[in-house]
Image (cartoon, rainbow, N blue to C red; front, side, top):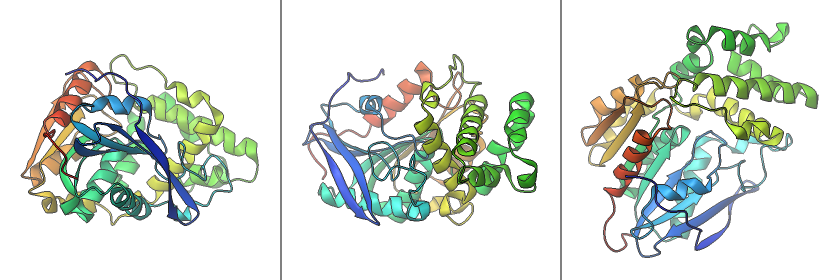
Length: 321
């Protein structure tokens, strides 16, 4: 099943969620359709117009939003003065609930992609009664072990690129984990230091997903504001293992039993190995796992078609909200 045609929101706005934060949201599709929520990747990727096309506009009422600090939400993490202490997974879960209440939705289908799968799992475990279905594509849990792999260990597959990534850290910070060292560089008072760190971080981001067939460098990394925002938010969440007890999302998977779920993962996804999706599926009796043999960390027609088809299985006539 291919992507649905491009659509525009029928409503949008900014929601004051407290802590000096305003979150951008939009609604697309059928106002009387099945409620659905889209959780974007990153952290810091923002919700882009193409994500609207994952949902049948005749059958879904879709809420999309930009998580704190990114996209059209304010203040932006692109401003080095923006305080990230009020930007944690727990804050994002509260924001999701405020959005649900704003739109008077009882329960919704949740689609998460990449980092959005971590957030979707955390939301479903915290509020299982609010999730009527869960689709997770490019599955991650942002555990300490996963962060260690993606920032250090996967360098065994990309030694040249990882060598550059590690060498960009100055000698005085090399006793730290790379994720901690980069987070420190991204708060340096010198804007040239911050810019260099953001550029090197995003070069590494492009490298470890490059096994995806047909991979092309991400054009968004050409924007210095986006590079800085993205690197700052990713290192903030990764160094803190998503601000969750380590491995919580796997250990507490059984709490999702009864929620129908679909896990979609690329065989060539070395930045987020299949192991995580497999561990979740083994513990989550009401889930199904789709391993896409010609995909990496997303991308490709088969991956995309499986995602769209899986979301469509949750569509129902009328509104559940």
